[in-house]
Image (cartoon, rainbow, N blue to C red; front, side, top):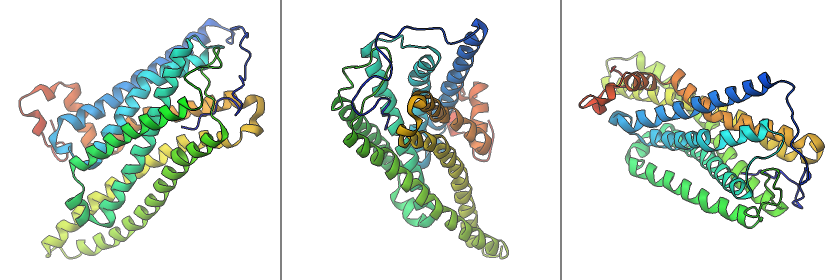
Length: 335
């Protein structure tokens, strides 16, 4: 994740000897901000835990696409647990309350989970593109084991990549003890910008543009199929394509929201010299929007996925503890 919170020379934007001054005029506003931040964190963690539990418990939901969604939900849940609370404190306090070792660990987790989220979204786009463009190849080649292998490698590659990024830029030795800053030189900034933004975002946008046109062609075919209900096999194929189109539409919304939350942050990265003194506050605000995407994802599932709505009903009413509840038909039935 390209987070050059300081300039390329690694100089602190704020003096090490700066004092922690009070930035809120009233205690009520101060407490209210913390209460709101805590509510967002709790909602983020609980919402993503519901996604993880639903897909893990109900065998009918064990599909390659949902494995990628679970990997995304795990990263979102960990963002809610470990990243958002610290980020909120850094936003609400005038100086860091954390030791340099803690800051180094926090930045490592933040970079790691961001990388995982971006590449999970990228592979979801690849998954939908293959499913719609070549459904026979998809159902023949794309399996649960392949989805598990892909998600496993995303997490492993992210860990090694971000360890190298932070280590070779000296970020395990915090140069700014009063803030959890990250220093990245020009070469690494360029590499990271390409690897973590340009490449995955270009992939996501390109594939979903293609998915859109494929879905339109399928819509025309489905309308033709529905005029000839005598051909049952073709009609079933039309139903299958309709389901794929709907899945692509929902995941398209998921990806679009993700890009809306991601792109403003990286625009700020490019406007480092323009923003000048306001750079830190603007970047923190855009980073908050980026992290808020982890909160929005379960809401998208709840609004557009009937299976998620039914699964949540089973979970919150404790029906998942019933015998053989994992075999419940949550796609067309109910708990």
